[in-house]
Image (cartoon, rainbow, N blue to C red; front, side, top):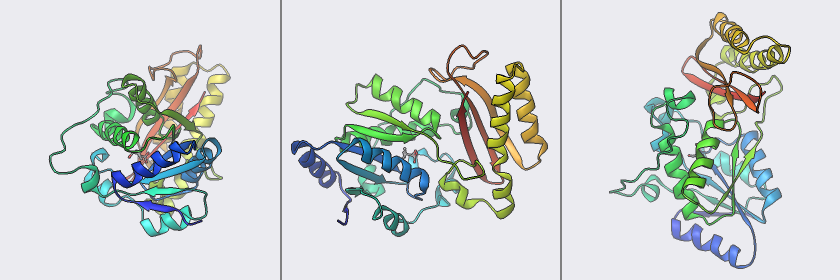
Length: 280
Ligand code: PAF
């Protein structure tokens, strides 16, 4: 069955309302296109928990704090559709920027939790763009669940916070990160890595694994973090933004393993910014 493509709020909303009225459950997979196996894992998860899956494709301009990143963001609607037909997705919602941000648009959702740390420190305004577009998508599409990858852990965190704070009636489903065989976390931006950069990129995950092992072996956390950061820097390939252990619950810095923590990294290879995190 070919999936449906909807471009306007009225179209997608009335279709999803129809499904809901028939008693079908609906799950949402928000994307910016450039679909890869990580997105397919989100879709698989959505298919497992719902009768109908809606994928959204919208390269959201308000979450790009860097113009070049926006104009070079990988993605091609035709390629994305070729991948989607191999899945059981029921509908693709691909609105234009004018549908999402009509003239006069002047509202934003700002989540204060985790402001000034991790990616927010390095991409000011990025998460306001993310939360605003997600709030819009959740309101446009009355799904019961929405699936987000753990790779963008801070994104998952701010979206959950927003849903709780604003009493949005949607359940956020986290989906584990998908990796290449060499450990590199899948990301649409990986397509922009040169051959040499692609070879260097898995170092990030390797260093994270080694750091987690050192911590579990009893090396003091601060020492293990220092060691990991300097290993990344000594390669001479990366511009390291952060390498930090934080509590899963509130993303505060962690100084012990008394509760679930995650190790977070962000580093640029040339102009390509990579992020990753693992549970500790
Ligand atoms: O993770 C992404 O692809 C984007 O940040 C999202 C959630 C689709 C919002 O534009």
